[in-house]
Amino acid sequence: MKTHLKEQIFTLKKEKNAVILAHYYAPAEAQEVADYVGDSFYLAKIAKKSAADMIVFCGVSFMGESAKILNPDKKVLMPDLRADCAMAHMVAKGKIEEMRKKYEDLAVVCYINSTAELKCQSDVCVTSSNAIKIVKALPNKNIFFIPDRNLGRYVASQVPEKNIIINDGCCPIHATITKEQLLEQKEQHPNAPILIHPECEPELLELSDFIGSTAELIDYVASSPLDEFIICTEDGVDYQLVTDNPCKKFFYPNPRPCCADMKLNTLENILSVLEKEDREVFVDETVAKKAWKPLDRMLELGR
Ligand code: CIZ
Ligand code: SF4
Image (cartoon, rainbow, N blue to C red; front, side, top):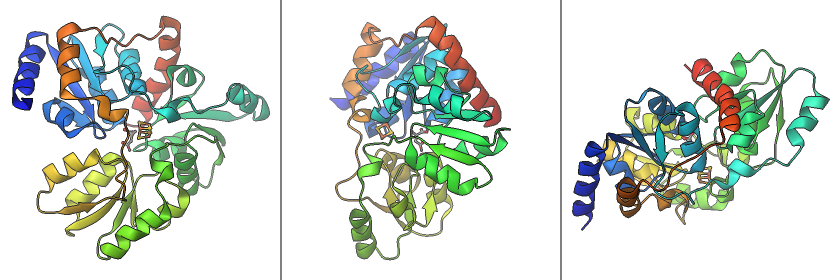
C-alpha cells in the first residue's frame, strides 16, 4: 500500500518538475520520499536555489511561508495547510513597537519559527543553528529576541556582551519535557550523553552534555565514538539518526516528544497535494516584500 503511494509520488513529482522538502520533524515516510531533508535554515537555502516549478514543503506553515517569500514566482504547496507552529504566534500585540520605543539601539531578532507578520516587523531572522553567530554579528547592543524565550535565553548565555531582552513564547512540545522525564532516561542509560535542543527549559539544558539544533545534534551523533544517546527533541529526528547510524541506539523522554502538526505530512497528503495542487501557500504581496528582508539578511549573515 505504502510502496504504491511512494511510486505514485515519485512519478508525479517528475512529471510536474516538483521538489519535495521535508523537515527533520516530519514523519519518517515524508523524509523517505523527500528530495531534501534538513532544518529550516538548510531548507530555506534549498528553496531559494531550487530550479523546480513547484515546491512541496513537508513542515509547518512558517516554513511554507518562508519558502514562498524567498520564491514568489514558484508554486509552494503544503500537504496539509493546517500544520502550524503554536510558538510562531507567541508575541503580544504591540510588544515590538513598545521595545523599539524603549531602546534606541535595538535589533529585533526573529526566530524563523514565526508568522510572516512578525518577520515584517523584525530586523533579521535566525534559526537554532545560526542564532548565536548572527546575534554576535549584529552591530546593535540591545536585542529583542522573539518569539522563543528558551532559545533567547540560551543565545543570551552564549553572547554575554549583548543586552538580550527575552519575549515570553515557547514551543509547547519542547518546553513541556520535564527534568524528571530526562533523569528517568539518564538513570536507565547512564552511559548515554544527553543531547538537547535549545527550545527546552534551562533546567534541562543544565543537565545536558550537548546543546544544538536538529542538524547539530545529528552531526554530533555521526562524529561521536559512543553508541547510545539520549535525544531531547521532537522524535522526527529519529529517522535521520537511525538511517545514518544503524548500529547506534537512541532514547527519548517518555512519552516521546511529538509535534502533531509536523505529523500531518503523511504520504497520503503528499500524494493528494501533488495530484490536486490545491493546498497552495499564499502570502500577501506587501507582507512578503517586507518579510523577505530579514530572511535574506539571515541567509547573508548565516553564511
Ligand atoms: O530550525 C529548525 O529547523 C527547527 C525548527 C529546529 C531545528 O533545530 O532545526
Ligand atoms: Fe513549532 Fe514546537 Fe512543533 Fe517545532 S516542535 S513546529 S517549535 S510546535
